[in-house]
Amino acid sequence: MEYHITLPSKPRVVSEEGVIGVYEIDSLYPGYGHTLGNSLRRIIHASLPGATVTSVRIEGVSHEFATIEGIRETVMEILLNMKRVHFVLHGDEAQTIRLSVKGPMQVSAKDFQLPSQVEIANPESHIADIAGKVPFELEATIERGLGYVPREMLTKEKVDIGTIALDATFTPIRRVNYEVENMRVGDRTDFNRLRILIETNGTLTPREALERSIEVMIHQLKAVVGFQEESDDSTGFESSAPTKEVSSGKDPAKVKVEELELSARITSALTDAGIKSVAGLVKKTASALLELDGIGDKAVGEISEALEKLGLELKGE
Image (tube, one colour):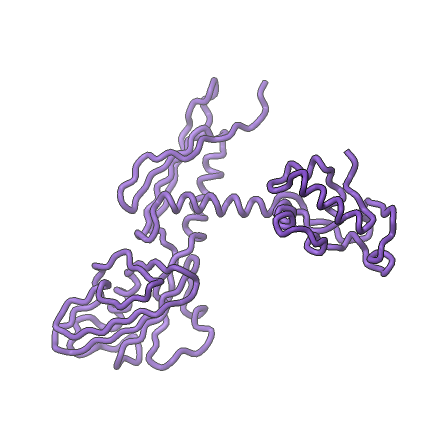
């Protein structure tokens, strides 16, 4: 009788039309469809970065409840139109975009003067309708972030008079749903098929959204592999040759992996595997270390030499 948990298939494209994509993952172990589907849905909704407008300054306007002579929209309507513009921000630094036009004209997102780090995914998005021969100048700040952030959190310091802070919806996702159905795998009919529908705002594709959400999940799960190392004196190893560190009163168990002067690649591989101190390192055998990503024979040799300087060694096979 088989008792191992089989692995699912890679995601399959059911359909991709513009900003909407439907994908399926087959052969999920019974019950895993909802486990994976709900986790991915939450990550896609809240953990994918995006860019949006966080503050606006309009020439001659001091607050969001004002009106502008010669412009059909109120200031509040203009701000709502600004929030409907979808931005792509290359880099993490906030950028400023500017608009300087004179009516009569229909103002849209394509009329903005953009720095090289900013792109607009929907340039035809309407901003304002200037009915008279009046100038219209607007300056907006574009920032990158996650999820939804109220303007009270964005404006930690006082803003300049005339600058209107906005609630920021950074997520590039409009909609994400999933459904699970049973499917046959071998003699069993209770395996799961997960179907995910993703709709974005055009700043990234649905496929990119799914791929990035899977990467986020994997990264989070890797971080919790293993347990935190004990920091007390009962470490379960013996020192065969007291060294300068030990004789000076420093407990080798409390020496961090970063202090062993290993290469950056080896240090990163150990910390990614949850090995953060010498106490945890000496509980591993050489063969156990070789099973870790990024650790080979040469790396094991370098680790052994570092431990030898502390009078320690890896656990015997």
